[in-house]
Each structure stands twice: as C-alpha cells, then as structure tokens.
Amino acid sequence: MTSIFELTCIYSTLILHENEVTVTEDKINALIKAAGVNVEPFWPGLFAKALANVNIGGLVDLLSNWGCTSRWSCPLYRCCLS
Picture 1 (tube, one colour):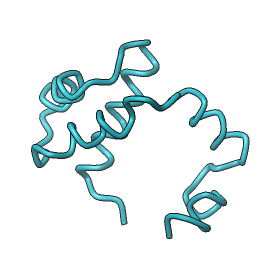
Picture 2: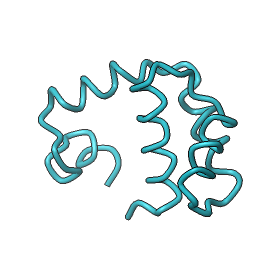
Picture 3: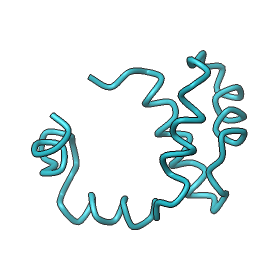
Picture 4: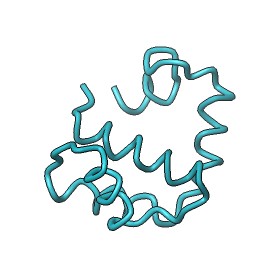
C-alpha cells in the first residue's frame, strides 16, 4: 500500500513536471510545505535522486499508453511492484 508520504512526493513531482520545473528536493519540500502535509524528511530527497535522470513525461506517457488507470490495471505494477 502506498503511504501518504509517497503520494505527497508523487503528486509534488507531477505538479513540478507539469509546470516544467526541474524536480529537486528543495522544490518538492516547498510544495509539501505549501500543502501543509507532514512528510518524513528522507522522502523528498529519495524521490529527487531517483528521478534525477528519468524522463518523467516519457514515464507518464508509457503508463497511460498501457491503460494504467489504476494500479490494478497496470502491467508494470502487477509484474514488478506487487
């Protein structure tokens, strides 16, 4: 099950990407602070480092082309992440 910490970082990452802002730990932390959500301090840095060299738009396109409207319909989730 995805935690509130992970979801907060995922949504922050998507917001940054949608606004064409580079995903960094500081930017994720700024969105989290603005949202008033308490997140364990290691999550934003973990997400920023994991996504440093990832084409986020390509990843979103890939998942949407697979018809991943939920984690249960997503082959990546069923095969690799379950």
